[in-house]
Image (tube, helix red, strand yellow):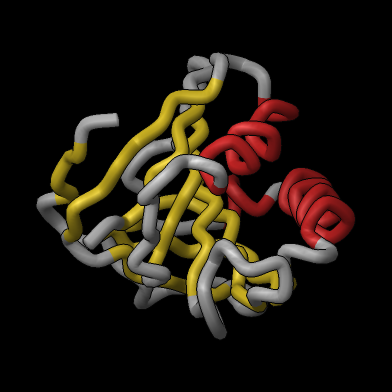
Length: 148
């Protein structure tokens, strides 16, 4: 995949989950269910769009290790975090060099399988600052990894 540059920081507001790769296939689907059942997207003020971001951040060690603990925030990009609703968290994705990988459109169930493939890619090293998935209302899905 060619690299791209994220020119401006993205500020994401949403709900947070602290988890690790060893339990992620159990905890992350439950977190997505919470995101939907609590209608989180509709409660986020100052949204830039209806794109949904799932941001992996605050890594305690290498994102590729099975015991890597991290925070997952599912939410939306916003113009300001000033009016963040109670119970929500925020993360800033800094301007960065990134590799972006498409996932088959309208198939969220393929996201986990795509991550498993990416972890096998020779030489791929995440900066472990903020990797994310972006889901657009028209069904497009992409995974974006910060690279050095």
